[in-house]
Amino acid sequence: MWQEERYQRIKALLNTQDRVTIEQIISNLGVSRETVRRDLLNMEEQGLLKRVHGGIIRIEDEAPITERVNSHVVAKRELAKSILPYMHKGITLMLDAGTTNLLVAEELGMLSGITVITNSFDIALKLRNSVTERNSEIILLGGNISLRAPATTGSTTVSDLRRYHADIAILSPVGIDAEKGACNFDFQEADIARTMSEQSNRSFILADQSKIGLTSRAQFCPPEKIDLLITNSKSAECPGYTELANAVKAVKLC
Image 1 (cartoon, rainbow, N blue to C red):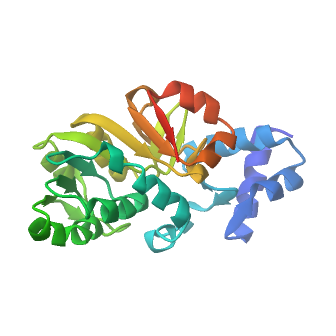
Image 2 (image 1 turned 180 degrees about the horizontal axis):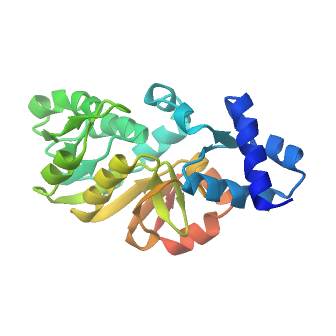
């Protein structure tokens, strides 16, 4: 079967269902898992679909943040707790608006004397009490209101970010692999994450096992720029994990 024919049949499946699993595609096309994986990577890069754990969805059906915030919560909480040994009084952090970072904010709220720079309304609100109770500073970046998440976004947010410098950027991607590093689906969100990485001494990527080996449209932190990848122990069983672990500077399994 020619590649273009495979693409058409995959798109036809998406037109009849909200979500299509990898197994459905393999069965329908009668081709190998590797061929399907390669096709889906190419189709996502062309903006034809969105890859999610175990399958694909249409671009317009990407899960909203209200759904994503409730997925893999136990795994994400493990990642959030794993950052605590790297924290200390006087540290300055940059946090993007990823759902994992909402749980990171809960852990940071117990610390004293830290500075957090973020574009996320929810993170800022979670940390609000620590300003007076724990002598911390919370800086909410300016910009346009995002239609995808309760956060600021756009060129004003990126410009505002460049006024600051941080010790660590804590970033939560849509997917991460050995070739592209950390990626996001939304280009503006990727611009913010990329700038946070550039404006920080170190970049920490928090990615649960569902994100290992996945890529998306907008790269924001190549593997060689990732100072620490924090992920779950189950990630070691994921395809592409070994290559990813060798590509980044350090990995912490939790």
